[in-house]
Image (cartoon, rainbow, N blue to C red; front, side, top):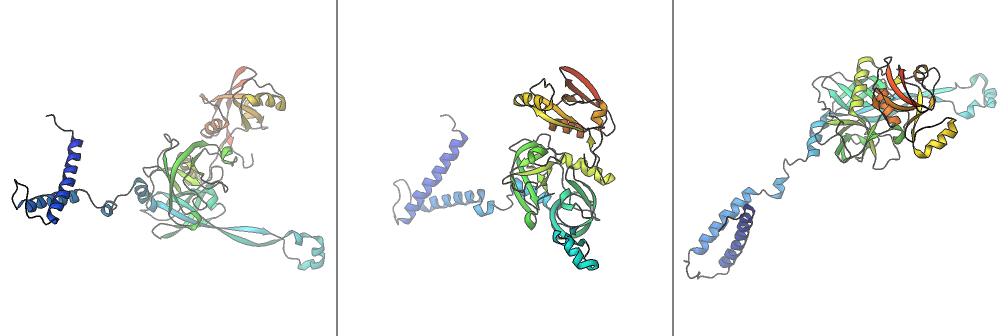
Length: 408
């Protein structure tokens, strides 16, 4: 006879125990005093003793359901347990000037009140806001969103354990919506930074923050999309390619961390779409960390600026753009320059309206988002090689980016 498979033996053993227990129970409780022909009167007791030993051993091997739940954290709970202490609440106050109501600007009131006319400005109004942040290092460096602390010189930082600190805003960058805060302490809990290099839609995403004043709230979902442009998200004045997630992100979550399944920070959450339902966005951690390092070092960030406006070409747009711009568009795809600002680095380098950008720094580009990303990685004042297609011929230009002006 061949050997039974291991799985078959386990099933057979389970059936044998089950059937035996049922038979022995019936035999014992029926009150029968006789035994099978080849068994003695001691058989029932012997069988029951053996079965009791088997049942006791099985009970020890398989814990009760309530015991299984003890110390049985899933990966989300484990990630939150590690990172949660480093997530903070940020309370900011800012003074906002108030203008005199329009009715009091009427000349009639001025003639009536004369010199007793109240000042055109009213006492400043104090606005309060709450957001989230996370500790980057044990010495009290904290990252959050710029819109959480913008206009506030000092903020109150509250840790999960209840400790509070007065924090100093070390720098704010509205272009990427990143800000940094410093608190005076040491040996603080801090996060572990991850990477978005291999990030893909469908992977787990965990958000921690203080939405709507509810401290240390955890939500989870998946990565819905990556590389969402600021135009797609609805904030064209920002220079960020966002991570999209369906983990719930609400007002108050802004500045909190977005984690992967290992509890590493892969992004900084930002609640930027008031009408979004089931949509959340986060700034990739590489972008946020690069900006934060500059803010801690110099207190400001200078973004490279070329001075062009671009659109993505499509076959349907080719003819209409040719007519509207009065130029000949020679391709169905690519990045078309529709405007070159006067005296900008692009104008100085000889870039023209109608040029189709082929590559930047030797890397082919297919969309304005890719162009913006390459420019953002460049250095102010250093030559940047840009290859364009102009009326069917290739031109190589050298552009030296300048700092992004306040009102480009």
